Amino acid sequence: MGILANNEGKILRSNQTGDILKQNYNFGNGFYKGETTNCYIDFPNLMFNIQNDFSLITWFKSVQSDDAFSFQWLIRDDLDNCFLSSYRVNTNKSLISGDSWNSAFNNSYGSNTINDTISTGKTLTAAIKSGSSLTQRSDLKTNFNPSFNFQNTNYTDLYLNVGNATGGLKYNISIIPYFLLYSRAISDSEYIYLFNNKLSNPPLSLFASDIYLKNDIAELFDFGGTIGQAVGVRDFSGNNNHGRILNLPAGTLQEQLDYANANLFELW
Amino acid sequence: MVKTGLIKSDNFNYENYSEIVRNSFKEVIQSGITYKVLTAFDHYFNEHFELIFESNEGYQEWLKLGVDKTITKVEYDWDNNLALITISDTNFPGPHEFECAGTWTDEDCKNAINNKFD
Image (cartoon, rainbow over all chains, first blue to last red; front, top):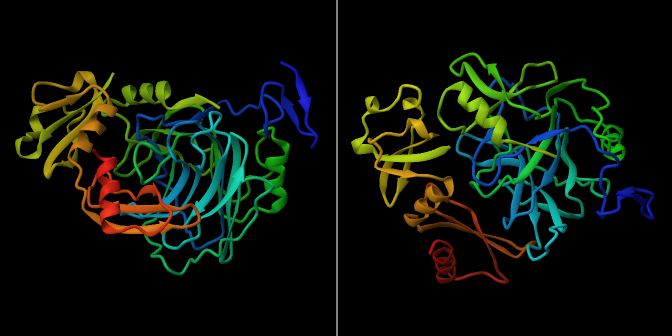
């Protein structure tokens, strides 16, 4: 398979079109719930205050299906009201290649859905909150401020989930190999570094990172409290904010671990 | 092999099931009847289940047979020409999305939901 350069100087593989990574990067596996499970990841030990600055970053790949949405992460309340989420909308289901997708952020308490057409299956996306503004970026073409209103929501009991959506099984058809939460607004240069390099290198800095998931394999963790031991994915930020995989079939821990590793991770 | 099994809540007896899975039952409502539901590895299923589905897809199809189609909220997304309809059903509340060019009547909304869950 030959390597070609397009007129923007980006290096493409000859059997593909669009804006793709420059080499066989080292993400390895990503979390993938598939179309028949409703498994997702939560963070039982995370102390996350949405009123402070934060950045949520993920690499993901939407998997073609007949469904309208694929979610990557969301922040929800106890009643499954979605407060903030990252998802893609398939606006042209008739396309065989499925290359025409939109990326959107949604605050279901307002009307801040903004779409931006992008043309790659593998995408880096980020939500960056600085002060009272929220910036969403899905690639270098996108940088906007949806005038997010942080005053109209009760901030207690909000939960961060990866690979979950409140709409049911048909959503979340994304492979998610990389997920980061910072308790600070990352700079433009950090974001551009992540996207431009397209090498899947580790981020420039893990300073003030709260969660860093690589989603390669499932492991057993002791989450303490009423949860105890459970199947999850490792947090590499050093904060022990390991993710717990929910909605696994009932069984022993070993059965659940084997099931997770056999069914919930796909090569990105 | 993973299966999903159900028992009407009125018939549920905690001690009939393996201690490994007996705390993993959840409740689900279908056609107004409350069931205890368990998704587990197949060797945990015994004669005390009233319904067993070999696949999650089959279980979801069964849930759709008893959807409460009462409409509770209708919103529109004119950026994408979508009607967003929420219904009372606890398993598929929505909002369910339908392409639309203008504001719908109540009848339009009912027809859209009925068509989706026929």
